Image (cartoon, rainbow, N blue to C red; front, side, top):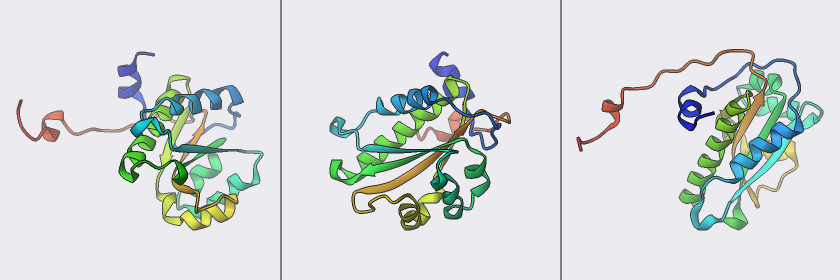
Length: 168
């Protein structure tokens, strides 16, 4: 898929079919995330993959107001910042944003649907408790919910001229 086609046609997908997502597809999505840019190439992202067979996946429903998306997704990729790999907090968060965007584009490119769940970070302590992860070593950045799409996404964007501060 052409990169511009992927960027312009990717949408957040919040409804998924019952079809399982292959391990191969999950690895392809993670690999795309791995290739994102990061400050000093520190690659501060860490992933925890939860599938429908993992009871912790459903337990995350209590950690977000988007529980219906967590329930429907066949795969959740929990994305953390490894605090031991930190270079600069802002740069590291930007790198993880790029990592997540790479994963969303990769999912779209192989025919999966995905959505970036950010609201869940408001319940970070609860998420760590449910997952059994170490809050001192891992800072929750987001959860990517993924599956085979059961909807067409839609979105609108502002005109580019509204976003450019000065003519060039």
